[in-house]
Image 1 (cartoon, chains in turn orange, red):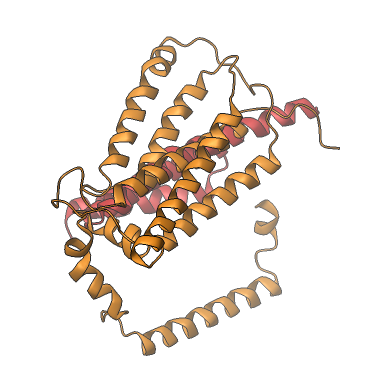
Image 2 (cartoon, rainbow over the protein chains, first blue to last red; image 1 turned 180 degrees about the vertical axis):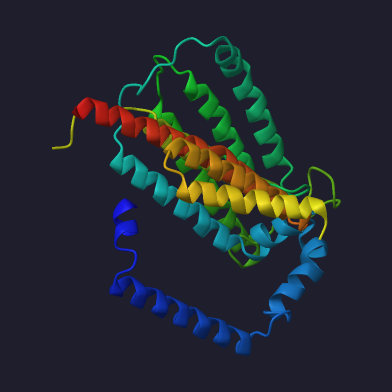
Length: 239
Length: 82
């Protein structure tokens, strides 16, 4: 950052910023001619809003788009997260605990009870994903945050990496299995083969809550493994 | 524009600037978290509770912790080399 500040006013910097501004203006102009500001960009979006509640049975409109109309994209999203977790695992080897905190009373009490409460909130948000705002991703991250509080005070911890990774793999497999069952039963991948039920009740919206539970646990285990790698020190130097 | 939305905008922009120009890394990370809280409020008042929740959880919660862990790890590796 400091070196960038030093060569702030040289020629290449000015040229680069001119090119960036020109490119931005061109991009805006092109976008504005093809999609005028304030108009609908896609015809599909209007249909999503129109059919969202009635065809999927989900009260939360966002969930109906994310998990029903665009479920394949969600699978891709989860895969991207998996790839990033793998990259972290590749870069940071597991080892002993990086640092040990002094026994602070507030932290000690909080670390004893907070993870369970935070995990409960996370589980609630995962299970109510088709009814209220939130869902598998947000709830999974909340669960991982609960584990993060636990890691703050981790002394000599035992990690069970096999459990964590097999849980994650199992959830990914379950997601795809549900998709394939839909393919067999309804003729399209991730077809909603369960009954829609009454809109607004917990057991409604067909396979959507099921998918959100899978996503929630997968995201939580991925983030926990990332956090674990970040809080452990490298045993021996790479070179 | 109401006073509340003005406050949210000023909070977000100022904390983003602090995050960019601060010399202390910990201050920068915490300013980033405050910016996320401002963005969360903005998303909520723009009637996007789903996005607001994701921003709060990821921006203010997990990524702050990850950054702090990474800073701690950097310090530990540095002291080991010396």
